[in-house]
Amino acid sequence: MGEELRWLVDRMGQPGQCANRKIASGYSRRQNRRQSHRMAPLTVIKQNLEGQETFRYSGNVLVREDGCLVLEATYDHIDMDIHGLSLRKGDRFVETYYADRWYNIYEIYRRDDGKLLGWYCNICYPALIGEHSLSFIDLALDLLVLPDGTQVVLDEDEFAQLPLSAEVRARALSALAELRDRFLPLTQG
Image 1: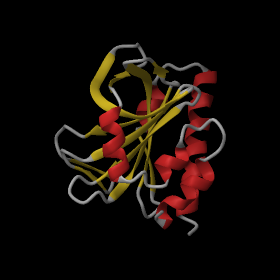
Image 2: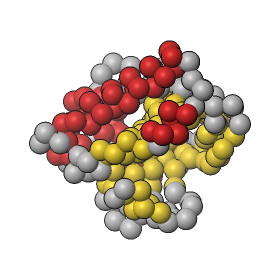
Image 3: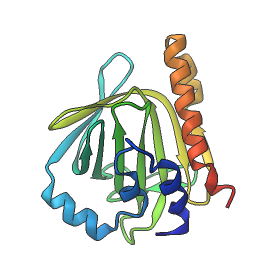
């Protein structure tokens, strides 16, 4: 296991947290490919606050547990750079969704050599996980974490403008704080 991932095993490998030890320990590309061929495809549906679909794509389920799902997907959009994270068509995403947490986590690997590029975390309502699809309502706020520990909070202005109840806003901000704390060991290395 790479040193850059060891902290995630320690911080996220708690009970009920959906095979994070498997994912965070690198979940080797060979294991991912072998298991993804055995698991069924699943459709991911991202929705806005009004429940309107804003994005849809497919992935292959790697792990399915009560209240949690991990899938593998391929980035299939235009190349883009997000604060030091260069996304290219064909990059590999290992995505973890929770039915009881206000975020999901995308672990991103470069298409050419499998190098870890970073993590993209969506602050959102807990995922609705079904047999053939999952959906989540995005709350605009995101956390980008690079392998060197750099953290960038994205779309704070958009989040501030959403018409959210005080409770939902507090849960979203608490989820962001939890994620920032979980990734903190990278910067304390």
